[in-house]
Length: 473
Ligand code: GLN
Image (cartoon, rainbow, N blue to C red; front, side, top):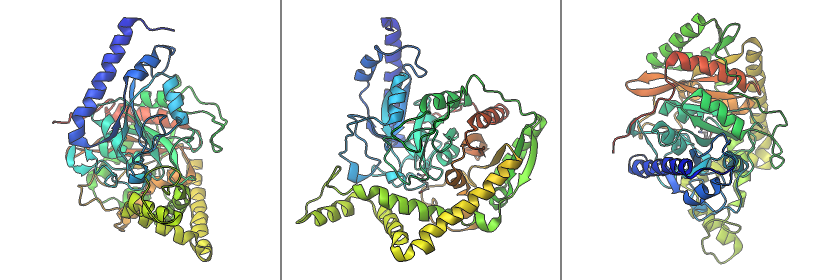
């Protein structure tokens, strides 16, 4: 089908306006690594079906998603000059549906971090208050949707990297079931935990995006054969007969009373719509293992996955007298100290003499956590908790390693969604001192429809659909 010139001009104007907005926001937010050329994509669009679900819609991708001919750095110095020769599966799908990629967004280097301070191009700023962090690791993608530059953007979520920045920026962040979206062409972090996710400002768009992105791909062996739902057509916010379990371990660990009250008030409203609200608990000692278990598994898998970033095959290369020296110099200069530290921790738990007491032990505890989590979902249709115990922290107070109970449990509980692979999403649920806060819901595997339906009811109660923030120059 060919577009008439008039329509094409309108789409072109829309994409150019979005691209111009990105340029304008860059000094304030620092969210973009690479601005993409849109003219060629607009030309190619003329040959595509106008029925595409994202026809002529500008979109932003996290910079760990391979884009043919477009620099893909994963916000790491070592990949500064890397230009992929192929598209990730999700990029093929987005293009097929008519999306126009306008930028590659900043992230914590290789996905490691929850602040987006660990990017080669520097900190990404929160659009509500630039002194605050965006959250990470998909911070660039999050702030561009929050600031209204694009309606949707893509991120990845290994340990909450879509759902946490969604909370800090007052938007929706979705991580579907493990295997629902192909990861072919995504620069990996930790393969047993990595998911593709995305940001939107309303539940309808969240439904459409999953219809576009999900589906079997033979090139990702974890990709599911299950049929993709018709999420938008089946969206139904009726809560009659649904049971929602509030995860008390999380709510009890939060210090900020207004964030606790936000969940309580929301639950009263959901109960008034017919939902049965119950309180559920995980064994507390298990909850406090989430972060160490996560870091043990994630760092070990990352160490193995990133052994190919050596300056020999691709990426930046430093000089040296021998192959070993080239690798050593390239890796020393190519990664930040923070990433190198994680590789050391990862290698340590993979040493033959440490495997049983560290890596395998972490895997066993992961299994225990998932068994308990699964049992909670036998009793209820969804588990609900505050997505984060605080608003977006100020740059200096964002400490990845502070080990209080609030941090261990309330700041890291969403990693349960990665351990289990269960579908999980964050929705905006209000404001504290003018800064956004969010609520997280998690459902049984492949019950994305249930998640969107409950999400829709939450959205109707908060009235925060399509909320974005104006960033002053
Ligand atoms: N903060 C977690 C980490 O640093 C999560 C990152 C992610 O989901 N990519 O590993």
